[in-house]
Image 1 (cartoon, rainbow, N blue to C red):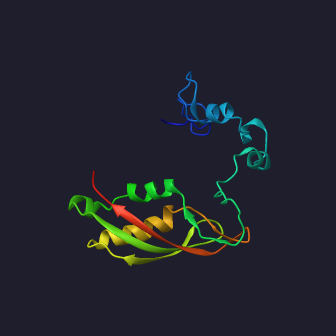
Image 2 (cartoon, rainbow, N blue to C red):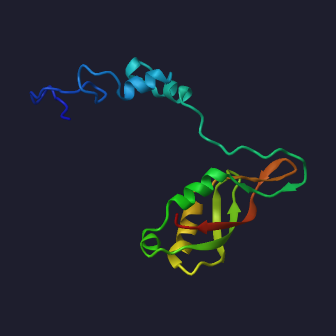
Image 3 (cartoon, one colour):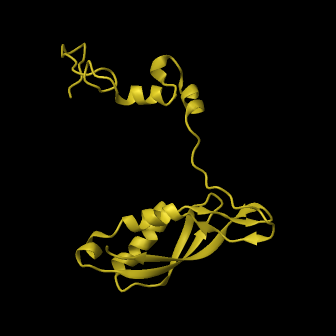
Length: 160
């Protein structure tokens, strides 16, 4: 779609949110539908930030006192294995990779060390990259306060 410009004499085929003229929808409609204030309505960035949904922060474990190790959130495990390495996929490689993961206060992986290697180096590398990029955890707790912790995790790479 081409957008118009007054100083070049072009005509616009879309409205200001990229929707063809005469059609409903687009980003503005979605923002308004979900109750999010937008700058086009005369509100500044502060109003937009205040009305935006909060950033996803990992939920804390139920506090029982003492030390509780970090726990991987299951959805992040699925996200890791969905990104099967292309070469391993082409060659039909499968395997199990064990990893020691250091989890920070924010529930993200700080460091990953392979403890059990698969035959495929692609799967080993994909495990490290996937955990660092997609891994989400409930952080370890010490006396009900988040602390840096470590856990052992096994990633099973399987086709079909």
